Length: 143
Figure 1 (cartoon, one colour):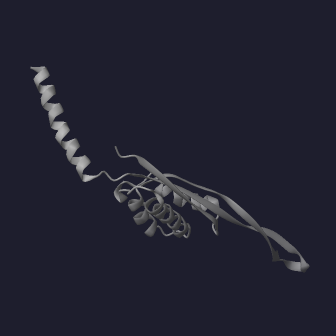
Figure 2 (figure 1 turned 180 degrees about the vertical axis):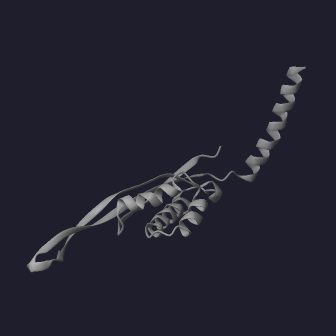
Figure 3 (figure 1 turned 120 degrees about the vertical axis):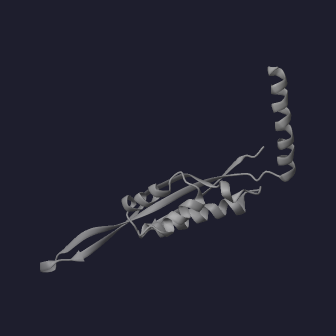
């Protein structure tokens, strides 16, 4: 029986505010990775590149680091969320020698993907052979 396998990626220090990055992450939440990549490539927001990079990293982690072979068509985004990163305090010069403070806010992106294990050909044939038998037995019982 095919099991579900998980992998994750964590991108830190993205130079975009979490509120703006979360809007992009909401576009691809609970979607297949192939669909998410197409959506993010056509999203005209700066944070889309960072979210795309995190999703592709998690996808590569699942395909390369799992001990079993994963079917690429079944890989979905299980979880994706954006948290606040570090804040850099900066100052802007103002009139009369003053300095006005502001903060450069960064964000962190966490992506977890899930994929199904590839079913071997022999196991698929065995399942196909077993299914018709069950149907004929059910028909005989109904008579």
